[in-house]
Length: 193
Ligand SMILES: C[S@@+](CC[C@H](N)C(=O)[O-])C[C@H]1O[C@@H](n2cnc3c(N)ncnc32)[C@H](O)[C@@H]1O
Image 1: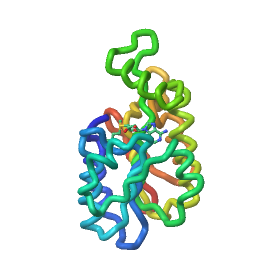
Image 2 (image 1 turned 90 degrees about the horizontal axis):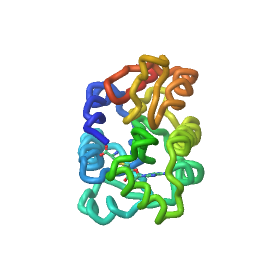
Image 3 (image 1 turned 30 degrees about the vertical axis):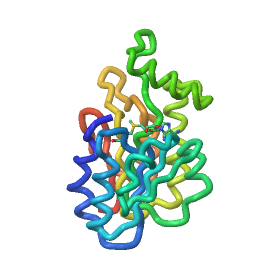
């Protein structure tokens, strides 16, 4: 949860013009990413989809005329059955990450309760499984020239691996030809540019 996506603009500006789409999995909860991508997509004349498990964005952001706001049971479910266009920008920032399992903060307990009300037993393992499954489903649709923005995915210096929401997604993308740009709390990966 940050303004990390803003750092992707320099990469987005280098994309060739074509009709591939922008896809955000994890709509904004007041942080502004969905409105920001709505404007970027409008500038580039691209279709934009923002997918979430709650209807918060679809009720509060209905004025964003350039955004297709999708409510589904999980990003992994939606990406399995609904993709049919090439993706040039994919923003993965959804199922929430618990920072320290043995010291859960009040704000995280609220999220755990909200997930519970949807029948989801929130866990970091399932967070990583969910983001990786979304990426695997999207991979056949990724444009040869494309950008994947992985928020809440810091590099853990002591173990030398990526941690957090998209930890397992990073090596998966490298295997598929993506180049890694590491930032403090996340990673932007590009291919074909
Ligand atoms: C951290 S917020 C997204 C913030 C937004 N990307 C931004 O940068 O402003 C996480 C969002 O992911 C949604 N979410 C949780 N589990 C999900 C899942 N399995 N699939 C899709 N969205 C999910 C939550 O409802 C919440 O709106």
